[in-house]
Length: 539
Image 1 (spheres, helix red, strand yellow):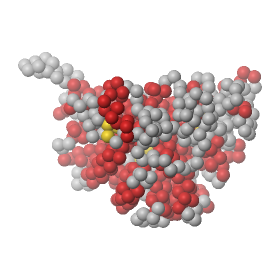
Image 2 (cartoon, rainbow, N blue to C red; image 1 turned 90 degrees about the horizontal axis):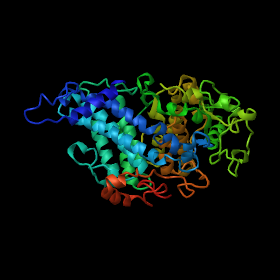
Image 3 (spheres, helix red, strand yellow; image 1 turned 120 degrees about the vertical axis):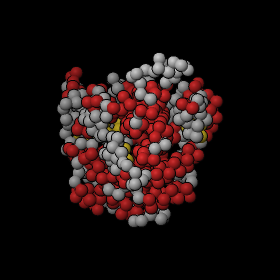
């Protein structure tokens, strides 16, 4: 994996080479490699790593969506004040930088994929790595438009062609364009051409798994449109289901990490910081949801920290994961001795430790240290469980999907439990236990709304359990489940509402002003935290 930055740097250097007639040899840096001598396939892992970077860690996932969708909570005092952004919708000092992280990282990843496609487009033996790169590029751009709404698309990724002020496309056009590109990419795979090995996911270049992931991504994007274009949503969902999306936990798209060579797990890198490790807790909503059904995930993902601040801040000391003692931290509290002090929360259990080592939040559950301290832990990017829940919803809506809503829901719930072992072996739940739990908690098919509620609440818990908080928030915005009550806290940036989008980075108004001004007119409510993207129509 350490080749990633090397080859990215080589590409950038190769694209910038210039010379004056007659001085080619003089002006050629012997340490640079020209595009003709560079294997562009090495840009695939760079684009994959960028996707990992945009969906995890401080890019927004932990600092925004985790608390907006009320999966994590934090008292947001002391050193980790940046968690006020997610828990209370109160801006921290670096909030503008955080809002730009996903924008910059995803456009960088999409550009890396684009350069791979350009460099290899004339070689018919590279169609498989090109198709994989195109899928990763679609993932990046879909991630961006889901966060921000209108984005540069039709004129984007053309800086090397001199187009540096791309227009913004409305999100409907972006979505339909990306879906068409995704279908082309999936159809581009060829078993008659060589495979590829430069793949840092657990697929390791397996073409069948890449195709399944492509169809699962198509299904996810199709279901985003249910509130605004049911006909298009159905068309693309049925196409994805017929094409062959993920069909087992073995098809999960998981990106590997390599801390020794500078590519550690961004979630672990963040939460290992002592202030973060101490203050980041599972929310009351999440823990209550798991406890309501004696969900085996509770002991897999949650623990009560050791007593006192010092021990609770030490990443080397694990907590107690006994199910009966787990307690979620309510969102919207601090430790500042005012009305919102955690000690005033209903049902406050008291602290742990004594004197200067007293921990007011010592009895609230945190993510298990086994899941948050391993810098080599892989990142789960897309799963069979999510795919199954989406298929369950499509079937519940009466669309042409093989299999019943109840069966897809059962598959999804079992897979959701089995997937946790990917994060760390200590969180593994056996297939037998997972199947038994899914069988004991069947889908409520008494009405469409009852089915949608169960399906999407499980989608929320599932994506939250493996830290895919942006996806949990995206699906909450689309489905309305679970029913969440906004936090009320002074000084918020979203008028007491749960934020429904990230604002476009501030420098866009300066660097790409006319395009930006034209583009934000497509945002329902304007470029602010409570504006709505195209598919997020009011219920």
